[in-house]
Length: 326
Image 1 (spheres, helix red, strand yellow):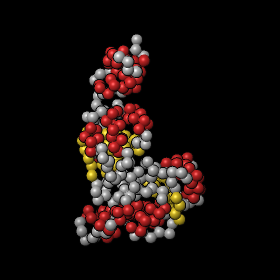
Image 2 (cartoon, helix red, strand yellow; image 1 turned 90 degrees about the horizontal axis):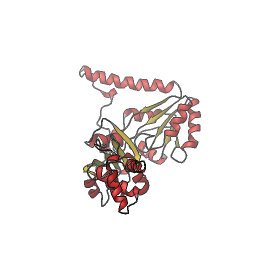
Image 3 (tube, one colour; image 1 turned 135 degrees about the horizontal axis):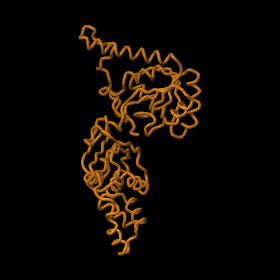
Image 4 (cartoon, helix red, strand yellow; image 1 turned 120 degrees about the horizontal axis):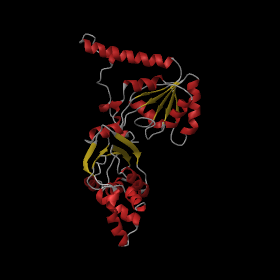
């Protein structure tokens, strides 16, 4: 998942100027007083919950801008018994930048040790301790470590809650200008082109808007695969460096963004692809075109792919229709 850059530690992005609910001017209007009370009530609720017994708290952390660190997130970190961090050094750096003081036990929970750590965390929670689980940036368990721990705690019947935080998925979707009423998150695209093309082939007919993560080192090749499999005209956006100083969202079509990405793009990237439009023709309607290509010497599977691309159909569905033709 997109990681927080070391360059965003500037106090310009911190929350120094933001009034906390406890600092609200009680001489103001009723709304201001109500907001202050709501803030205190939330803090009291968190404190009461913390004293009620052990639990797992998933904590969303900033994806770039420290100003996105909520008071609740900071309170969860300072009040936890145990911090389970994807990278302990990054976590300590985050607390230093936020000027947080804590005496928690800090342990590492990352991809390669999460499965073995999960039973240990379950036992800590059973013993009445509050465990805060966080990744380097964004929400744990969303293309980041956390799922196995959550699953283990759920199976053990232990309390699980979350302090919501910034999300590259939702932010990129919201600013893309593409339909956001229904969408799917597909995570990181496969590293190898063959696997990437197979996935895109499966998703070619998906009607919902799709969100992907991709590395800047692979974006040129990836956009080439999008162009080949999805076609040139599908609306799309690429967001880079979300919430950071050089945040940018490129909007256009697969073809236009393929050209922009030809020389590579810097920063962590979130891709948003519009869903497929309704197909007016069926694969069976184009078996004649497949047959002509086969007669000219093209392999049936390749012929199905060419026809599918031409008419905006699924290669697999065209090929299966060819195999089961009467």
